[in-house]
Length: 163
Image (cartoon, rainbow, N blue to C red; front, top):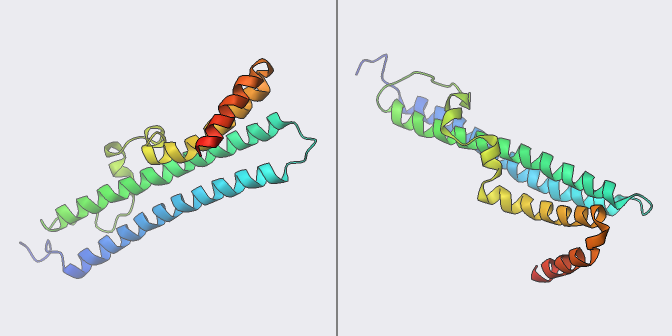
C-alpha cells in the first residue's frame, strides 16, 4: 500500500464516529417524533372545545398522524442510508480507498434502501401509527355514515376491550 493511500486508525475511527453520531441523531429524531405524535393527539383531543364538530377534530388527528408518520419514515430511511454508509466505509477503508472520506451525505445510498413510502409500511412504523389511524378511521366512519353508528360502536367497544 502507498503511504498516501494508507488510512490511519485515527482517521477511520473519527469517520465512523461521525457517521455513528448521524445514525444516533436520526434514531433520536424518530423517537422524539413518536412522543410528539402522542402529545399532539392528546392535546387535540383534550383541548378541543365541546361545541366544535367532532368531524373537524377527527380530521385534525388524522392529518397530524399522517404528517408525523411521513416525517418518522423520512428519519428512519435516512438512518438506514447512514447504516449503509457505515458498512461501506468499514469495507472500503481497510482496502485503502479514501474516496468520499468524511463525506456525510447519505444520498449516494438512496437506491439501496426502501423509499419513504415503503418505509412508512415497515412493521415498526405501521403498528405505531396504524393504531392511531385505525381509531381515527373508525371515528370518521361514525361521523360520515350515521346509518352504521350501531355497528361502528360495536367494533369500537370490541377493539377497546382487546386493549
